[in-house]
Length: 398
Image (cartoon, rainbow, N blue to C red):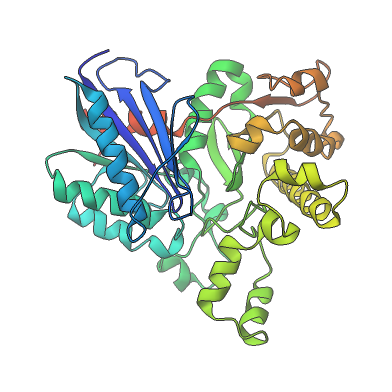
């Protein structure tokens, strides 16, 4: 290992993930030298975990829990450095708007731009920017690079970016951006290595985590995706509603007299699997309860139906399907959700190998399936680290 390390931060509303990579190695190692996270920030029982170790309870300042969690990570990183040094920090920033289509070194001007996008990604954007602000104030000489979840989708054709509103709305920046771009960028890399030319055909990647989306790729570039103007769009998620008739929102506000703040909280935090089941945002928990709980069954059925329906829509855009890949926490780990989704896609000639699916194998389709189905672990932190190094070396315009 060299003496130079890059720190990657992925800051959200309730967790901060971090990873340290060997910045001097070429090529950049896919596995982090050290990683971990603080989770349940702001909750009654925050925890710190690293690598494969079990999480441990920690105490955070209840008035500034996110700031306290960031300080804890910095202290633990410093304690681990020894004679090595951090030469830069890469941040996962969810929204780059229409202005930022590539990673960029952050200064005060860039930070101000990115704050203007907070309404488009309120669950993630402010926390990443607060971390950047803290480091800018305390270590202004330390290079920080923002790596955007929206950037991968800048290859979307204009027809996929348009919203059916007035053209003046487009001029004001109301358009479909797409998200989970760091995950999809990693998939574009690993699928090319694993599947070769086959991955360059008609591919759909299902990023199924607490947030969820699909991305249709051709030539390993994004040509359509389910998330649009905000991270509320598309698939039903853990606590987010996904695509919803805007008339329902108008009804909640006009007839039921919910405030804008109340509706926003409902759509982001009280909908999806949690809202419909009244039990949990986790498919694993609902699968354990569905035999005896109708609401759990309904929530899972709608969750799978929305995935199947949206895959069908993307298949129509692609003109067929060659490769379907599951990734992120649910996509990588839920045998049953993958089985149910694939069962709904049998009309495509897709058949599953139940043994391989149970093993979470890289290829889980049967030998005679007309569509290859795969499972891949995503690695957003590695993508962010590599992008940041490219900015510092001058191979990406800032």
